[in-house]
Length: 365
Image 1 (cartoon, rainbow, N blue to C red):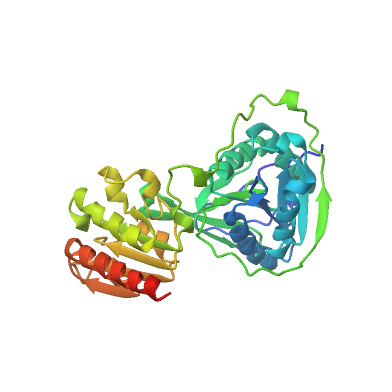
Image 2 (tube, rainbow, N blue to C red):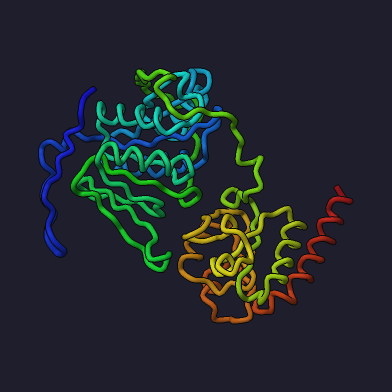
């Protein structure tokens, strides 16, 4: 197995001019996306990353590649085709029964082997449970840098990846460069970026690589697989309609009004960070930069004044309706429809109005 020439090079201080990349770094080329596949299903964040990776690759004038791993050819066939149709020029595959279920050890070996041999300049993964686990382990094994949980990516003419992520509890945004090592790695939150348009029938080059690892060499064993959809955890990032509440609801009991409206609309419900801190809602229902990033068709925010971290988590919504007693609340500036009023009084009336309207439509249908 070839070893990546990952030697650090000196960087300059603030206000200086960045030095030209050393020769041994110039062997690193192309942008890679580790495509997350479980039981033949591609996580949507992988398509979003392929869209963003396409932009980075085009700016660098290099190829966009997807990495697809799985237990059999049949299990990943659809994922390979979908990777091409979402913009990849080449797909690297590792197929082995050991990879049927995600486990840290074999997936680390598969991905690090590929990186060491083919030497990508940039490697992107989704900031999912699986992606976070794999990315940290791979970065540590490769002795390279990783910027986790990013909300924005950019690249300069020298190929330095500018990865922006929230810091200090979401109160600040920090842009991080990995100047001293390659590949440059980042994980990106689901629903932060838009997936590209599908190009049906698009194909490309497939490069297969053996794993070279037996089941006996893997310590962990999978006893049972439970899909997220079969758990009680909220799946806010992929909801079409989301109703959320903030401190303007004044009490945990009043949050039931948000749940009532969500139930009538067939929506998911969530809330701002202060509600999690007060134990009004569980952490998996927090919306915002330090919680879940959402892109619903309709987002109704009730009693949320808005902090920058909340705005970043919801601004991709198609339609934002804000209800707040303060007409000068920051959320009212970027909401598509701002309603000045007490959410505690308006929510019951709004819920009843929707109930009647939807009932009439069902009868007419």
